[in-house]
Image 1 (spheres, rainbow, N blue to C red):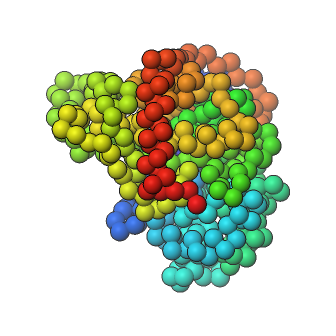
Image 2: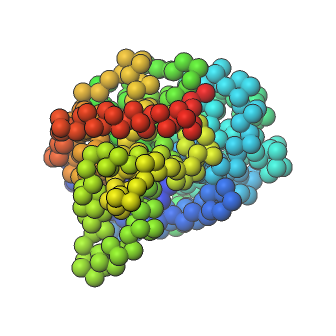
Image 3: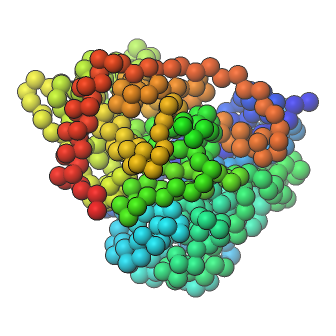
Length: 491
């Protein structure tokens, strides 16, 4: 009988899971549930116990399936850059501060004292999104006690509750600004700055390669077999990279989720100069991710729907038409360049790449009476792509250039957005039929580490650059960069 893998991704918005048949990657069943976010006044938190209950509910759902006895392993991926505190007994004493939480920006002056030295060791520029800044915030507020344990992602507590040990994979840990990216150990430089003892941090492991035994308590709570193994897995960025098929050094991955990212998978570390315009994370199994992530990705479309798309929401409900199909149609009615409208799309939580500014705000430049909602929507979508293009330009300076782009994430379902990417980058854009690329990437990581051959049959939709749009986007991109230099110059 075929072996089954349960892949679980703990995202910013949802916890998603899929039960895969390992031999051919076929999905037996899937499950998704929204993860609440608690916001206000710079706060953007999630509850670790709440996330664990959703995870436990998810595993229980699959354990009740007829095929559950064939589930051999659980493989985790998760959002990066979260921070939370556990008591000595392993109970959360704070919520998880996510990468959208901006309160730790007050910690940046301390980090900036050794900014480039820290970047060269950890691969992480001086940003408030990283757990190191949040540790400094927690110390200043008196939240963190000497014997407390520290969570560095949304999966730490899940691993602890599943196997009974405080562990984390190298891949996810590399997004904490606490990992020595070159030696795969906790950075002495970062620990000294943060005033943290190594014993407060999770024990590190190669998450795709080392199986962990689930606890008897967890097996009984979920109905899962006691023989099932847990893999701590990788970061969502690493899983997504493999899931979209961006495994060559000349293939660029773009993810359009709530946030957005642009990344290359490389064999050796690549770091920027003192501008620090991109990150370097460990991907797992001797590979590295180099690129940048932006807070404002698919969230700009969500804002449009909630603020300007009330009529479309009602029509979607009445006609039974997917709201994103309607939004795609609206965006397509505006021409390339949005009729001269240029947007800095910083609607949520400032921005982190290529600029580092937690106070960044959105801007519509050139707005005139003739402009329509379609122009506003398209300008925001173009603004996201221009921001990613700026990161790509920085990567290109270091010899990384794309002949192909692979896209994933919910935002990639919009044909207009894929065409914008192809036209701005002037590179063909491939989108696989399999939308949940992060879950598929977990399967690929799992099978690769175990040297199991998987015969995937995934068709791709290819969007080619429109030559007629080249000059329009060249000029619009230059206008975008001038606005960026005026309002948010890169220091």
